[in-house]
Image (tube, rainbow, N blue to C red; front, side, top):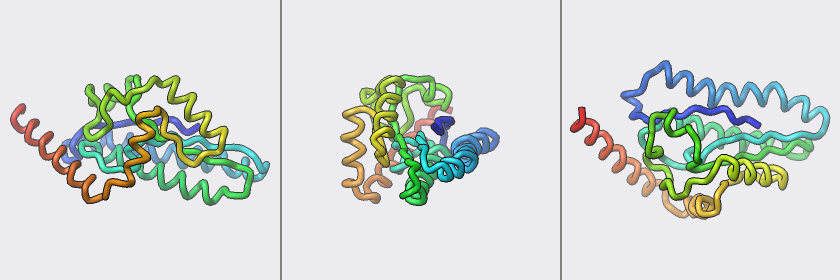
Length: 185
């Protein structure tokens, strides 16, 4: 299970490069390195599995989190391509894409009320529920798991919204956030 991850809730031009570099190393390079170390042996044995923890953010546009969202887009693309590479080898790959969880993640990422553009906090589930649903999907060999019933419905409907509309909403949210920050300091 590739579950290490960092978040950052900040407009990119105001981000700290040291923190951004750490986020990229953890969310991208560590995941790829772990897979590189373990997957060849699984393929050789003809069995095994990888459960990558991505995020719904990796499937959409969210302001105030460019580096984080970019890393989760990597997880989504990497997981889909690796799943294809592993077809017929006996090795399965599942990507779990959680939404809001009851955890310290938002606080550590600098976003006490949840990340801008993320689903509302009432979609929040416990980390234990997320783990149970992710593992259940993995055991069934699902490609992608969206833990939480209401969140799952939202994420399944997401592709129905055109990208231009999602971009427009992200721009509005970022513009409001930047204006609010300018007024406050």
